[in-house]
Image (cartoon, rainbow, N blue to C red; front, side):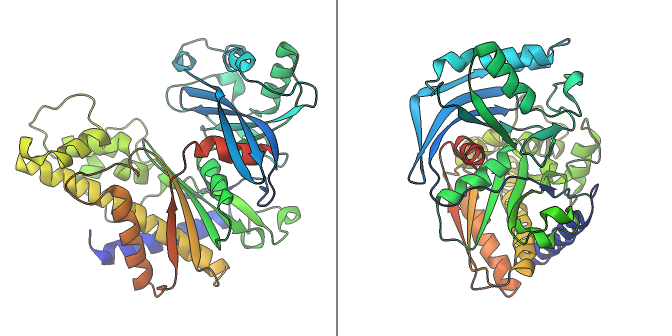
Amino acid sequence: METKKLKQIALDLKAKIESGLKKDGEEIQCLPTYISPNTTNINGQAVVLDLGGTNYRMARVDFENGQPVIHPENGWKRDLSEMKNDGYTQEDLFKAQADPIGEIKIDTQRGTPLGYCFSYPAKSLANGDAQLLLWTKGVNIEEMIGKPVGEPLRRYFNEKKQLRFTSIKVINDTVASLFAGLTKPGYDAYIGLIVGTGTNMAAFMRSDKIDKLDPLHKTGQYIPVNLESGNFHPPHLTIYDEMVDANSDKKGAQRFEKAISGMYLGEIFKSAFPQDEFEEKFDAQTLTTILSYPAIYKEEYVKMARWLYERSAQLVAASLAGLILVLLSHEPSIKRVLLTSEGSLFWSQNRKDKDYSEIVIEELHRLLHDFGHDSIRVELLHMENANLIGTAIAALS
């Protein structure tokens, strides 16, 4: 994609982030998370729940001198696709989430904080809980919509399992990645990024630069902001993008996600070859297979796969550039940025050419150079179990 277009995309996102910081209901929502994470001397034990789509994990995370330790014998996960069943209730969900608690070795005498990584649209509350806005991914437990998701679950655990969970903090997966980066001190700014089945970004921003905040929260301290950037509608999309959007469940929504994420790249590819037949499951992994073994595929397939893969990475770079421009407008002294990224697409490998993450970082630095910010260096962090670690930091904050 031409640098000129990528710069326009970055500037468009910058303007939309600034609108989202001013008032609610904008294209880029900029949802504040009312949890101030500990950045030094994080110590203690937390139990972490991670409901990512219909996959559910539970683990104990110990922090010793600021560094996390996840005990292999204290982790448990299961598929919760049953959440999609008609008639599935809050009681059913809470019971399924509580069932494995006996497998986790915890201190039942002193009491333990809970962290809950909840990857459905939710509004952060001032007490660290979150209010469910709507269900996605085929789930629809109506009685929970518009209500807090954390505190009722904590009470259920304590009453039904005779436990002593002292508090609960709720964050989404992007904010969890953002928090996980805090285990690497010394940076001027931190960004959390998801590029997998879907996409999103989060960053710390100065509270006095967020106009829509209640004056009580405008302390000048930094506050985590979940952008919900998958809903960004960038300029310079193609006819293929329009076709995929027209055939989607939610026409007009999540346009950036539909242009770059693993869930949709296969659909864009197939829309370019309407006369050809393809396997039903055609995702980013299929795309990288075509790139890695080009000799066994049609030349036009390889060219399209390469274009989609590179364009996706370039668009991610442009979105990061737009966010960094916002951060710089708040804090011009920023020089070192840590980007903690999660997602199968972001860390995918191309046997024949540059990997996705390489394209993103090279393009990002090129754009920052063109914007006159040569001195800024963005470093990548790939952390195993970033969700669990970041959520444990929230629980212990």
